[in-house]
Image (cartoon, rainbow, N blue to C red):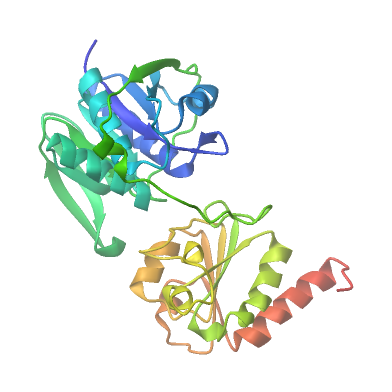
Amino acid sequence: MSAPVLALISLAGGVPDRGSLEAASLARRVAGELGAPLEAVLVADPASGRSAAASLAGLGLGAAIVVEHPELTLDHPDAWAAAIAQVVEARGAVAVVGSGTERGNELLGRVAARIGQPMAANCLTVEAGDRYRLTRQRWAGSLLEDCWLDASVRLMTAAPNAVAIDVPDASAAPAVEAVKVTLTPADLAVHVTSRDAPERGRISLADAKVVVGGGRGVGSGEGFGDLEELAGLLGGAVGGSRVVTSAGWRPHSDQIGQTGLRIAPDVYIACGISGAIQHIVGCKAAKHILAINTDAEAPIMGVADYAVIGDLHTVVPAISAEIRRRRGMTS
């Protein structure tokens, strides 16, 4: 069998997350150009990986690989890098594609260091052959770079919210194959000790169809009450700029931008956000952007589809009131 292309798959709610579907789609195109088989490596515990195999139908995968080691959990970044490096060697992989999320880039970067190969992050397109020609995002997405990637194993991540996800076809769910790996105490030394549990029933920023974002113009943590009300009426989620999280008005998990989350909702409502390039990177994949700001010259206006020039603490409650009126809600 020819050398495979591997797609790294992480799960959310027992199914592949968006970033993994983007990575699998890019990996499938690479495999198609090479005439190589496509396989998935599930970055999950073996039980969850086996359970998720059925959700991988339609992705053109020939195998779904689960990694087995009694001490390996999702909380061990170095151990996962070691495990994936061993899978790459065991399968004789010619290329590996992962998600261009913060965690995905970190994981594949660690793999690259272990196997002594270069890694290209945030790829948009790949022309595979004897040499790989890539187009990828640089400088927070403000620059597109065309480059060559030469290596014995090509390691790449797919740019978040920028690679089209393939429509599932009639291909069957892949067979699950287990690969046992060997890990050292050093591999397992670095691990996550605790996590902030999300609020029950809260819509995540990554999945929300509507996101209401707040910036310096909100004024305080308490000022987000108006934004929370609007998001609740629209079935959306609330996020913030870096200024907001640095000030402690919102947790870092709510930060939208280059060093936070990159979102792709149907509608993004930016309230009191000036629009620094680092924030634009995080929201530019939204289908529509509405900016609410007192400054008609704010940079956010350059990317907004619609704008309201005014005080967000007047405009946002007015929008919420109109939604309630149209729905016949008394309060």
